[in-house]
Length: 430
Image 1: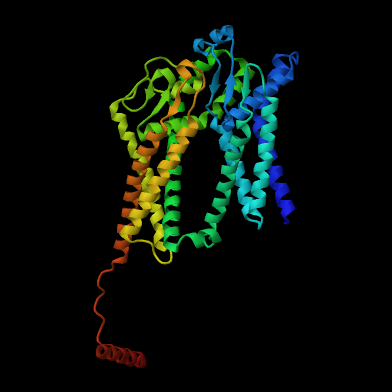
Image 2 (image 1 turned 180 degrees about the vertical axis):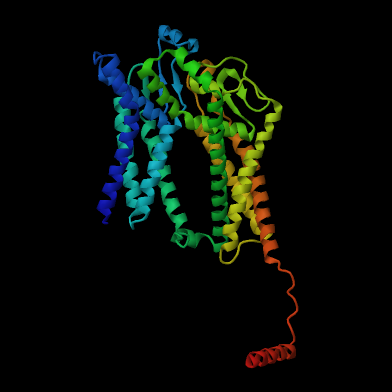
């Protein structure tokens, strides 16, 4: 493919990604406009609501200015002064990053990877800026200046992830810039640390998702009762469900912080962590049915899950290290990999914690999400301990397999020759 074709295809896929993200919110709201309101009101109101939801999901802040009567009717007495919504529904951001990774990986298969990445990010940023300009309203409006920056950062992260995945799949390919800047041993330490940290964080996030699924199943009746109490109707229920699905990745990351130990904040209700409880009730949102009112101190045993995730990643990473040429399996090598992976893993966990939190409204919803530094520090230590254990087990296992018992002493040459002669004589006699 030529450079122009690569740029066009990347830009086209970026526009499609934005259209799908907008359509997920716009389709049900358009149904509400057509069925419930009989097209009597302006469709632009529902367009702005869809655009606001999409931009909030990407991480763009929104400014809210409610009058006193509206604030009191929503149960937000502290919302009379203007405030800013800073929390992102990471379902939208996750979809955007994954689509960006797909585009980046496809661009990396061509000689024009830089052209494809720049074209995709520029197109997605342009669409985001146009949507932000059309979503402005007196009561609620996204930050127009922030929108292109956040869009470029979110979609660009996906593009870089896809390019990195393509390079990781082709291990013989080393970018010339990295080859000249760092030696082979340094690249091995950094690459192995990144691989081990990525595996450990991925296992921990998967375990957190399973934990949330179990809680949803266990508290399904309570969630249904909250749905019935809201009396949102069929279309309202669909809209509410889609909104909660957008925040489901946030719930998974908050559960991850709970498993690590620091837990997460729920505004004025206090911290939700092992050995801690809420000081007040929660809003009647069905997804919050999984939040326990209090957790016993014995729940701190849950920190074994991050350690186990690190151990599994370390054990699997050791198999790759041992098969490398030359083998990268000395105790010093493994210590460097474990330390580097702990630092990288802690940094990723801190970034995820920061990304999942924010402010939704003044009062009880003013401070939501886990602590960035606590999640990063404690998570890095726990993953690092598990990685050290996994690498050590892999090393000892390899040493045990390399050891072979002494073979039985082979017969002397004279004896072997005599045995061969006897065998020939027996064969001839037969």
